[in-house]
Length: 74
Image (cartoon, rainbow, N blue to C red; front, side, top):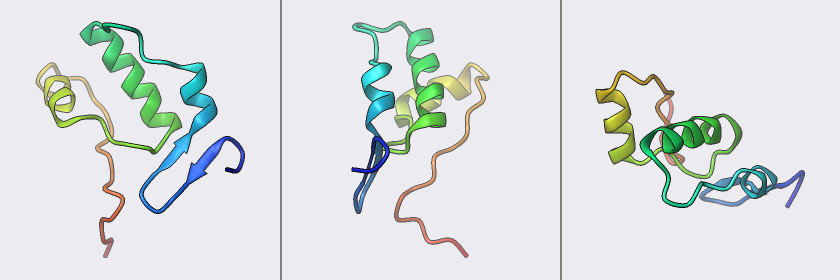
């Protein structure tokens, strides 16, 4: 672990961010969106779930599509 981040073969976790920003219990849609948008800026451990991403897109909420960790870039 370096600088609060775990670097492994499949994920990078910003441990300190996660500890300081827990997902609320029984979050509303708006709370989920807010948390995931901030999470995307601060941690690379996982992308926004497809279900939530689809709901966000349907409501016109903009977000950066997550890059797959094993994606091959040209």
